[in-house]
Image 1 (cartoon, one colour):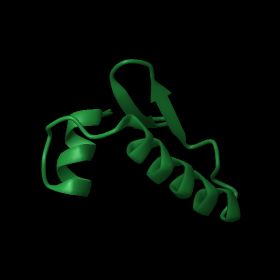
Image 2 (image 1 turned 90 degrees about the vertical axis):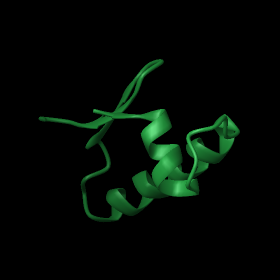
Image 3 (image 1 turned 120 degrees about the horizontal axis):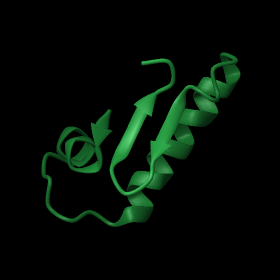
Image 4 (image 1 turned 30 degrees about the vertical axis):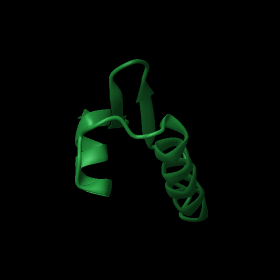
Length: 56
């Protein structure tokens, strides 16, 4: 699992509060790209914690 703070650190260089919509936009874009590869359901949202790849 990857926490929201880890994603913020990797994407924006800080784990300070980043607008939740900014993270959602990036995840939506990633899921759209994965859909083109028939992998659209591979990212699982862990409510209140972060995200993980299914089957891991």
